[in-house]
Amino acid sequence: MSSKEEILASIRQHTQARYEKPDLERMERLVYSDKVAQFCTISRAVGGEAVVLGEGEDLNAIIRQTYPDARRIASVLPEITCATFNPDDLEDPRELDGTDLAVVAGEIALPKMVRYGYRKR
Image (cartoon, rainbow, N blue to C red; front, side, top):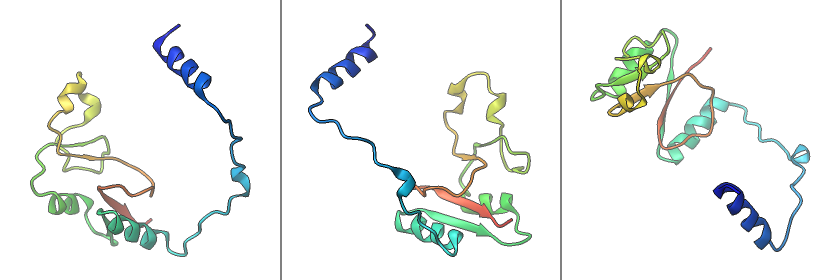
């Protein structure tokens, strides 16, 4: 038996009460009239900052302006021309050590203690 299996067996053995999972289908979904504004509000509330780009604004200029001290900028996105390297080109993951900023594609999600950029489409 592997360590993982031993741990899970121990948890099962010591579980005194079991509960059914809730039916999430009946759960009412949150809906916001302005999702971007709500995202920005929540980002600020948790100590983050969301940057909403206007029409024609240069994302690379905003990145440089927001992170002036960033020397190692990683991105696989071709439109991020301020990136200093593509992490997919690295042979060893240890080469990521010292990365100041990673620019990735993503959808609006739960804001954490980081900055987000969002371009209106």
